Length: 173
Image (cartoon, rainbow, N blue to C red; front, side, top):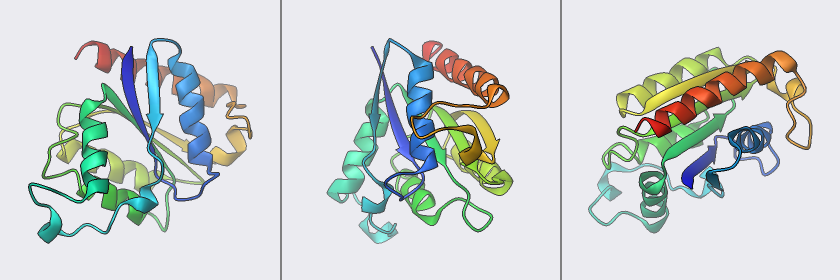
């Protein structure tokens, strides 16, 4: 059983990005155990002075979950032409630990537009040495229902292909 750690880039309890995490979980199928991060809102503001050998518990738990996973899913909206600050903050806490180094990551930007956040997340994940499979889903809310079923056939086909690339990256180590 492969372990997947999923992170929603939205702080909303009932977010479109949370629905996409559920949809991707279904696309992965059997053989994958997906654990979702409870909320990025619980990660403290990044402070290099606190990034010590014994980091804050929330940060230590985050890093441990990333390191123990075979792959990571990140689904995020775009806010004000970029990544949500809380997701960028979470990613900043992983830099010194190299938690993402060599880790397969499926990075999904599910937003109204999303081009800026899409490029930003690819750039950040590349810098922290993740193996990135990325997908942009513009007008994302109109392409998924409240039961996490992707209702747009083109989006579903493209996302299946991206999930397949992510799975291949996990299986190829």
